[in-house]
Amino acid sequence: MNNLLIPDSAIVRDVFHENDDTSTFSLQFTDAQKRLEYSFQPGQFNMLSIFGVGEAPISISSSNGSRENFTHTVRHVGSLTRMFAKLKAGDLLGVRGPYGNGWPLKQAHGKNLLIVAGGIGLAPLRPAIYNILEQPALFGKVELLYGSKNPGEMLFRHEYRQWAEQISMLLTVDDASGFDWNHNAGLVTALFDKMQSVPENTVVLSCGPEIMMKHVVKGLLARGFHSGQLYVSLERKMFCGVKKCGRCQVGSKFVCHDGPVFSYDVLENEPAEIIGVLGRE
Ligand SMILES: Cc1cc2nc3c(=O)[nH]c(=O)nc-3n(C[C@H](O)[C@H](O)[C@H](O)COP(=O)(O)OP(=O)(O)OC[C@H]3O[C@@H](n4cnc5c(N)ncnc54)[C@H](O)[C@@H]3O)c2cc1C
Ligand code: FES
Image (cartoon, rainbow, N blue to C red; front, side):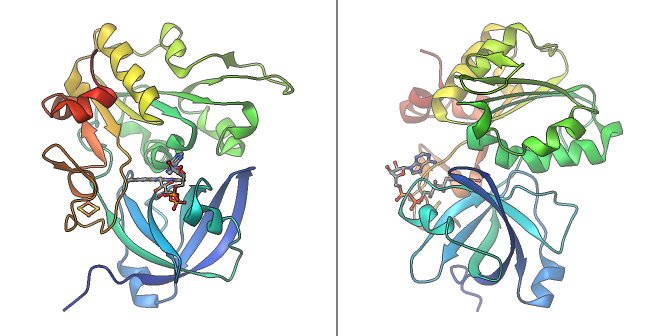
């Protein structure tokens, strides 16, 4: 019987340093059969492990159209993820997955999309952006609002010119001092006053720090969006990733299995622990 907790081995093919504390790793399964079988949906995650050190849930940040290699974008915040900073091409990692549900892109066919991201939250949204860019006829107008602490922390900067050919983009930073910056300054929610998106026929995808998502939900509800249009991706500490250990449980939901993407109309019926993070005050 397959043990769901045993990872497959993957080789690091390439490392791209996005900024001082975040890197994008291009990975390839060492097993040729696994490479053929593996597929994922935008918004899903893998459990990545450094052998003998530990394991963490990390979103897949590449297009689900390319099968040979896939990427993960990791911010080096703690004991395990700081070890990722030392990885180089040729090193081996453990990979289990893909897990979770992903973004509701099929339900968004024929609709407009508003994507709101903060910091590392752009990583799980990048596969959705690629999906939209690859099949523009399936979607209406698409708008991306992205914020980070400063211009140097913005992820995937070398791709924006190409993205902007097909989608509207508004960028903002908390602090631009010391940078040549001609976009916006302030919180990502301040961009709501400048965006073109309207509630009618629009689906919202959002990922970022929970305090950001709380204000995104609040700001959009106040602008006439309803809770069923808003999808947020939650981060919780995880152990198994496969609904066995209960580590990620919040209310009646298992973030690893029922999420990480939740429609806000599902969350608002959950007890205070979720509502406290994301909900109305
Ligand atoms: C579904 C899902 C998808 C995720 N996708 C990504 C991703 O694409 N890229 C990515 O970099 N991370 C992602 N994360 C977060 C990632 O799993 C954690 O950052 C990681 O588990 C931290 O492990 P660690 O052992 O290095 O840190 P720990 O040793 O557990 O933590 C050390 C310190 O870092 C702090 N910390 C932990 N997590 C975070 C965080 N997210 N932000 C800021 N401080 C933190 C802790 O509070 C603690 O103070 C995702 C999490 C989930 C649940
Ligand atoms: S991480 Fe074990 S149940 Fe979700």
